[in-house]
Length: 204
Image (cartoon, rainbow, N blue to C red; front, top):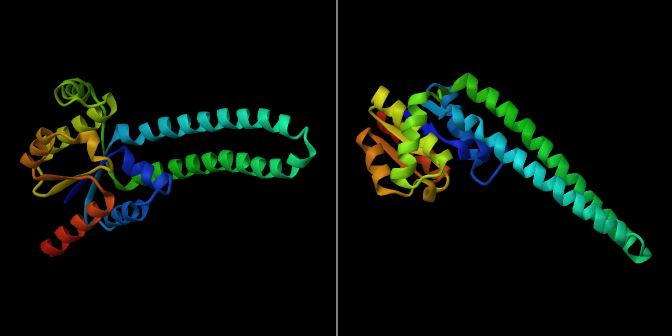
């Protein structure tokens, strides 16, 4: 069984978001060779853009808070409270560093166990067409073009495409096209994990 995952799948684990345990369980199934996990190469790069943007926003917030604290600390009654805010500022920076570290480790792990779909000129050309046809963002169009390219090339008997935010690919034509290649689109990672487990049980 082929399982396609996109950028949010990687971010879910790197940021330890609500469905990260299901994502990690899917990766374990890949390591056990019970499924083939396939990730567009772009989806291993795009998360860095997200984390870098978050880091910049947090640094900007830190600078604003520092300016306000300098003013507040001129009043004796606010000095104790300012220590709490400084602790929060430290947490903001530390959490970003930890997220980046997890992302690097995760990327290396996925490169070892999962198959990646290289980003080539054919996919870039196709993504431009999909962007116009399905009103996708440039990023989502690249992911969709990567998945579709791999499906057409390999023609799996059973497959699914996992994404967290269904509105990103909320087009009946996209679902219909995927289903032509026996690929079910699932918009929650926990639902995706249950779908995979059920397919494995049936196959056994």
